[in-house]
Image (tube, rainbow, N blue to C red; front, side):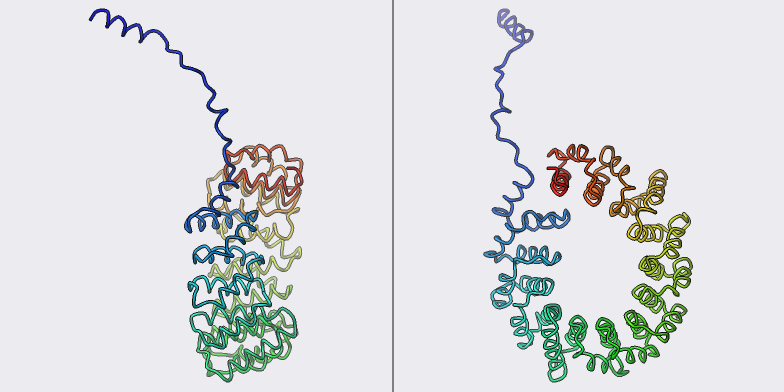
Length: 455
């Protein structure tokens, strides 16, 4: 027993040397994120693919488009199909037209979500070959898909003037001689506006000018007359300005944007005094759309004093649409006044950076740093988002700072600024982010280097 105890103590005190193999050298290299995503497309479940598509959307990553097109050709899963149709449609990206038209033609054998997303996709990419199948859905009065088909045809039909006219005539005939139902009537009225054809003006004027029509339908008709923007529709819009319904009245004010003349300008200025807040919003929209500089003092007052935040927002956007020094000076005052709400200051900064980043990026950066120092998180994040869109050499130092010492969000915006402004001198800092340990940031950094021709 004594010898066993001694032997046990010997093994405790003497180091054991194990064979030193090199397992790492025998392991296959880790797969890149792109390779893993490609495997998901080829072998993943519907849930896995849906998550991947959302990731690609969030990252504005399009390098797997060809693989997704191939996937969709044979796919029947509603989640996969609707996800890819949405992903491509939001970008106006073609490649799925044949599959989408097939889904519409064979709609009895497809899931409801698939058909709806296919209709929406065809409208967004304005696929001319879809006109026949879309009309077939409408003519058959298939209520499940009617609204989506009408919206899609309104977009597809404006591929050229001749097609727009014939499609408008089709809608007018259907509206007048058949009974499309209240909701579909509204969709057809809005589709006539999308088409922009003069053929729709008589019907739209009749609807907009009728006190017997539902307010929602009159408002849709006024919006469509504004989109067409033809002088033939102006008188109807002016008549609607005296409607007792405040929503119709505000829609008429908003519809004045594309029209000119002293009478129109007087109406817009008078609308800034309307007690109904939507009328004031409409006045601001109309002033911004037509760059109505005489409205600048009214817009300033609304941006500073109006009790409704939505009115302030629209006044600030209208000032941004002016694009002149007087309006920019007002926006700068709104930005620098720290008593203003975060919402007002961020929106003012957005307008300034969009219009004149060279002059105002420095001010926004100073206010952003001030917000960070005071731990005003919402304000800081808002300014960060705004400055991330800046196209100006004045943000190069900030971009370098973010790349080297910022957090994940700051680095992501810094990559945007690098590619937006072609800051090639920052290539060394960008390359440091391409390590796979940085996850999605690494892929974004590689994309930036590729776009700048530095990969």
